[in-house]
Length: 335
Image 1 (cartoon, helix red, strand yellow):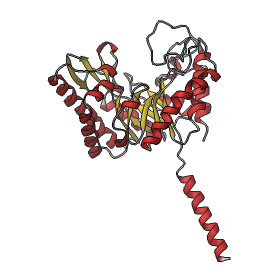
Image 2 (spheres, helix red, strand yellow):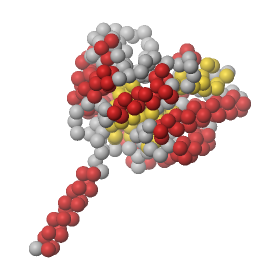
Image 3 (spheres, rainbow, N blue to C red):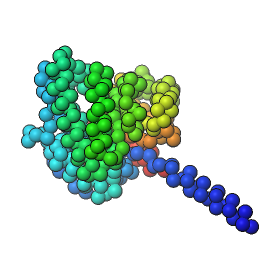
Image 4 (cartoon, rainbow, N blue to C red):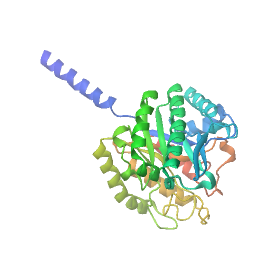
């Protein structure tokens, strides 16, 4: 009898251990910084789609690449782009039991792609490095203050990392002296395999704008097929580094050919196609959300005045007030 009871106890303990390491998915939205503070009215639509995380995104700005100093937390910025605004957003969401990824980003004047930031002199590299470090460490302090669950150390900075890898390893060490939570970096979809410091972070972060279909209105089946090659490489990287994968951004515009070049936000093709957005999104969820090595992601993007944005005539990324919003809600409800 004692042996039998002992075996039962071991079985129960092992079952509990297995259950305890199965983590809930990160079902997140990328919450756009605005001019205004937020309140529970603005948070309710996020909770209504079963999101359990938000990415809060304060901004720094580079005026031009000839003078690459990062300006941040200035009086000229919108409320949500500053430290005070990011903290206010975080406090409100935490009160509603929604967790936080703090994701400070930089914007180059006129919207130049951040992945191409590259200096032509050592002097300018030092200006960029010193000011970027101040920017990120400033928000690492805030991440620790608000007990953010995740801190993202950068977004789509391929050339910066390629040219100055030692800076990034040193920066990560400095961040860890301040912030004690989990770290990631948001690599562009075609960048993550070249990012050198995944061993130093908790998650392999990917902005998941992978091309999955060249069709005008891609079907779910087409997109599932289109994901196969990408999924294989993503999973192999997860296994190589023994790190879970986080989609730091994912989503599609509600336009024709939405799966062809999902990273393009300003192309001329603006014909609204809600079915294309819905099908590409379904395929992404079907491909990844049941995988143990995949921890979830943050849909791009969510605005605070829910009733005034999106809608069936909107061709942009936001899922708000479109059929795809119900798709996200359904997948985010799964345990």
